[in-house]
Amino acid sequence: MKRDLLALRDLSPAQLADILSSAAKLKADWKAGQRGPLLPGRTLAMLFQKPSLRTRTSFDLGMYQLGGYAVYLSPDEVQLGKRESTADVARVLSRYADAIMARVFAHSDLEDLARWASVPVINGLSDLAHPCQGIADLLTIQEKMGTLRGVHLTYLGDGNNVLHSLLIGGALAGMHVTAACPAGYGPQDQVVAEAITLAAASGGSITLTTDPLEGARAAEVLYTDTWTSMGQEAEAEARRQIFPAYQINDALLAQAPLVQGVMHCLPAHRGEEITDSVADGERSWLFDQAENRLHGQKAVLVYLLEG
Ligand code: CP
Ligand code: NVA
Image (cartoon, rainbow, N blue to C red):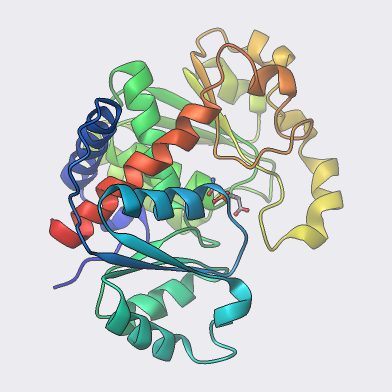
């Protein structure tokens, strides 16, 4: 039966660990100049309803590095569900490509694609989850800290798709994940409940608070993302009034003595959720994360197509 990656909950702890070690090996091999193609002649259709720098480029070049080929389909070209139905798009693309990667607004569109496609479907970001980002983030933490188990990560800001994937991924990996979000802007209850269940089994933990300093004090890794995700632009000004206490800046870092690294999935809104001094500072892991999208996704492609 074909496998999809719509959210990190699709993976068991062992499958996630295998993908992370495969990604680390692919990265080391690539850097050592060992570039034997693992997916020769295989193809990926990439369907975008929203803009992208990292996801598009890293999937496209990652597929090329594996010996395959990727084709980019812009929001205007496909108009999922408008020009033609999601079910028809899924069935047509399945006749051309070995896998489909899609960036959508509604997570239900991905579920529809996966239901109708006969090839694996990969979530390249939805309103619910960003699992490929989560895999790159865990790979980065594992590289920097030497382990994931027991590492304390605190996310500050909006309870969005990126946080959802960190909660589930961190819980699967035995991490202690704290989310500090303003009241009314926390992660979805169902995602939190799933993460708590997974953390109970892995020896990790999930903590929710509205106090950014409480979250920061115990953190070894701090993480933030935009206060206004794609599709929420009409709320941007209102959100700018609500979120400033959750900014990662030098004053907050001074209250977080254990922090070894600061993370952000990018694109950053410098001066809003993160300052230049932190994003460009000694403890910034921002560009290591971006780099790891490439290798994490190559591991996902190999897992789905060859695993
Ligand atoms: N982090 C991330 O997914 O970036 P893009 O929106 O540029 O793909
Ligand atoms: N939460 C952000 C992530 C962008 C990569 C968004 O959905 O726009």
